[in-house]
Image 1 (cartoon, rainbow, N blue to C red):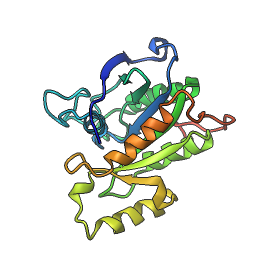
Image 2: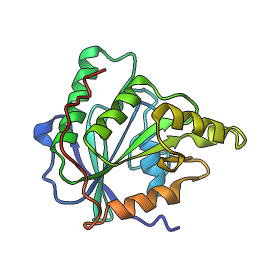
Image 3: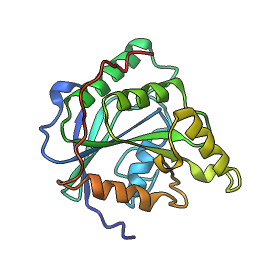
Image 4: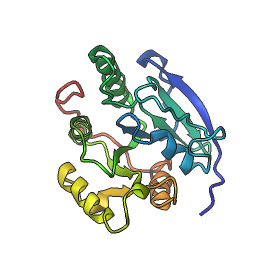
Length: 217
């Protein structure tokens, strides 16, 4: 598969009033701080996962990214990188502010086609992961689970870790894509989702709004 995709950082927003006008399909990426969101984006675009040539900046300091970043891909759709959540050293006020920003995006976006929820394949999902998945399901937002850092688990143990995620998240194995920036496993499968959902004729996103909030936990 070719990695010759055009990509640029289109918009960086710290609050809802800065959100851009909706003009193209959007696929959002969300997950715990340090789960590998920037690494996923860079790998998808054939950029260095952690080096200077990366489009999305990676950080060794979890919880540092506090903005929503829109990346324009192939002049066709946006990858929307949402702030990482769940970093213990951030204050409750900061965590509430980030949750509010993320929730504002979900409530506002009529262009949203799907959310990629990233979880670390090595560990059981945390409470924040479960709350996020419940929220997305409540609003009938299509979601695919990306199990990152798959190369850090041996091939023999990987199926067991995926079963653990399936049980904890109450999803089928078809709803989880194991992903590795090192050996590029899962790259083709994620791009199949992007190509489908990033099409102007791709599936619409939201059902009826439900009585749910990311602040509920």
